View 1 (cartoon, rainbow, N blue to C red):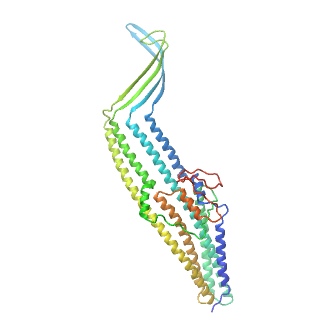
View 2 (cartoon, rainbow, N blue to C red):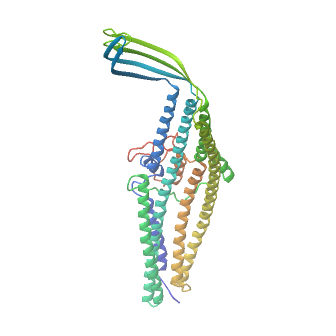
View 3 (cartoon, rainbow, N blue to C red):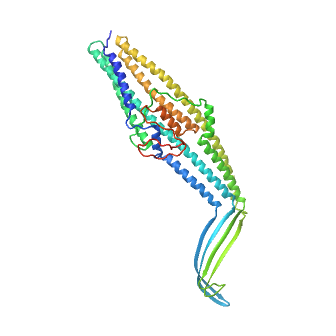
Length: 480
């Protein structure tokens, strides 16, 4: 019978090491909440800034279209020198003449301009929806980087705890070999497992470094440290727990569908505008000016005179034939209208599929969490049983090592499944087009450790993000 008197101490020291390592990871210095990182990223992220600038441009573009319905006023001035010679009766006149005047035009009937104004408004609405989509994408990208760092931190913690446990097992195997109660095989197996865990520790440290760099790149500042999850972890339920309700909600809320719908409306307006090429236009025009002839003119060859002139009238322009350009333009817009309708159908189908995939992916993650929680408890019992069996000589060292590996792998898988479940909640709402900063605030309040700063839910979660100063609490304005 083998006997290992140091094993009770092994079990206690392994548990203490794991708790200590988790405690260190759970209390990062100057850690930040997910909302704080979103606030920082909004002032740095190029994609969100691009969408915001595009909205500003679209609003200005819409105001440009209004000019086609407003008066146009211009100042004209010219100066020229003329030479006139008449043979019978003989008359020669050389001299300059100057003209200056103001012209004004007010469109009275220009249907194409009114349609262009409506299209300008549609362009602004499309840009707002694009900014909304970019805001939701920013929230998910920041959350992805945030949870990736937490998962990598947990992985290093569990690998370090496993390394400590294997090191204790190696020491016990060597002591047992020295006293003759174990074979050299136990020591060799423990050494091989220790070397393997060291390699895993190196890989985990490197992965954590990469994930932290990715978070820094997303947020736009170095040294970001996310707050860990509360313990015990209580994952939020999916509400509503019906995929058809999520799909129906997405059909009315998803920015991708709403953008495609507005693009279809814009294509129909393009057709109407093309058809106005056959219609007349009516403008009110007025001119007031002054003409100066310092040496007279051919009609009044005096020493010089000035003349004031003012005109007002209505100008009618009726297109008769334009080389079939109007007819072909109408054909083009009709084809583009059909294309926009097909794009709308495709957007609806794509969004519905994305919502279903996100919903069932979230359901799968929740089921995995429950299964892994049960597996964690079972793996812990299996490890305890193997440690006891090894102590009394009915189990060998490799059995304990395998049980340790299974337990810590299960812990890593469970931590990753929890982060995937939380991220899946955000991705499902993004797929449905309903993700807002309010969801981030609620998630922060449920996931922050007990000593993390309290967060208030913003009063207007759809407001644009304002870039906050460094080391300030989360602002109430953020992307939708």
